[in-house]
Amino acid sequence: ETGVTQTPRHLVMGMTNKKSLKCEQHLGHNAMYWYKQSAKKPLELMFVYSLEERVENNSVPSRFSPECPNSSHLFLHLHTLQPEDSALYLCASSQDMVASGGTYNEQFFGPGTRLTVL
Amino acid sequence: AQKITQTQPGMFVQEKEAVTLDCTYDTSDPSYGLFWYKQPSSGEMIFLIYQGSYDQQNATEGRYSLNFQKARKSANLVISASQLGDSAMYFCAMRDNTGNQFYFGTGTSLTVIP
Image 1: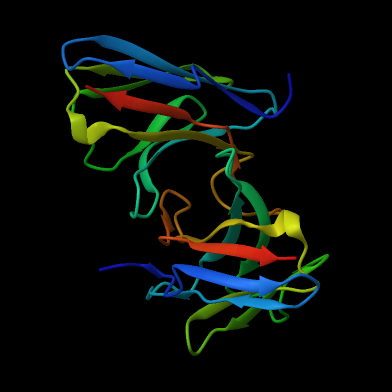
Image 2: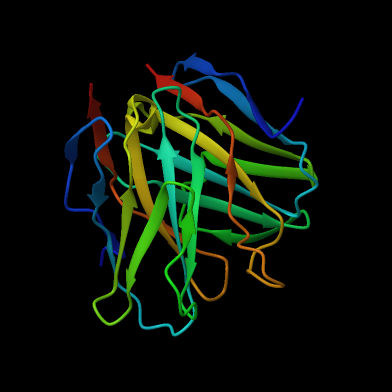
């Protein structure tokens, strides 16, 4: 496996369900991110982890709960979601958080999980 | 306030022609980074090109170049010699000086016509 992988690719859940999205990066990066992509809206940065510590939480409802057990894995735990939470959830990683030493620190994205909340 | 503005929801270009995708940004920080990403229908975001706020020259990566006009706060993407595989959504993004925040535009859908 190379790059950033996400599972599952598609998820349909009811509002009372509990599910988890998984992201794994095989790039040796130190920073990982969760984004929400809804139709006609800009990508929304949800959470940022650097060296397994959460450094940013952009006013995301508590029904979304991230977990970063190590620098290669990132989870997004979902519970009691609403239909408006239906979206494409993208995971990304970057070497570090701030460009240095000539690196861009561009983000590498996974293919996303298409979530539908009924 | 919106940090990244992409005013072209959709663009069409003839194969082998060049096309410019517009992006303006809003920040008062002296240090920031600008990115362009491509998102094909498969969903995965692909990094194309980067411009640092202190870079003196416009970035280029193969057929991609970034027309960086700092005073105007614009960072337009130029794709030369368009190919059918260039048909996709294109997103402009900005990283702030802390590195903690990334702002994306709403994207431009590019269609390359044979």
